Amino acid sequence: MSIRLDPDEALAGPLYAVAAMLLIVPLTDFVLSVPPAQFSSVQWRFATAGLFSGYTVQPILGLALAFVVTAAFGAVYFAAAHSLRIDEAHAFMGALVRRLRRA
Image (cartoon, rainbow, N blue to C red; front, side):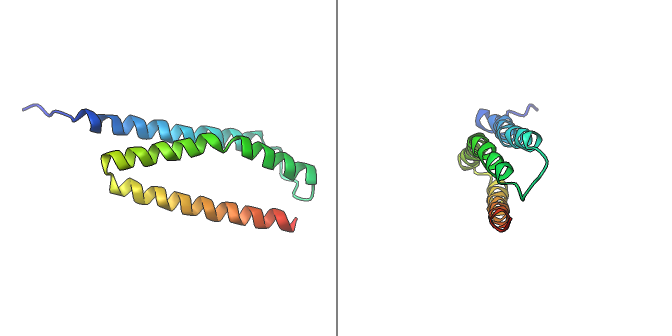
């Protein structure tokens, strides 16, 4: 008995891998390119914010690709995981903004 894989379902795994790489690579590059933290330095804060703004487009495209794949293939588990990640990212960005305002 041979098992035939639906071509649409066969694309889901590689597309999730591409979406993960679109998320992980730019964020890793950002973390490695930011100099050591100097929260009291205005120059450091502006430089970090400038670098971060340049690295945000690709992860957003990665999330969008993951959402499209999830919607196309109806993977409910991944939809819940994506919403959790967005909530966590939102909470992290809010805490970072509050921290930078205090410094």
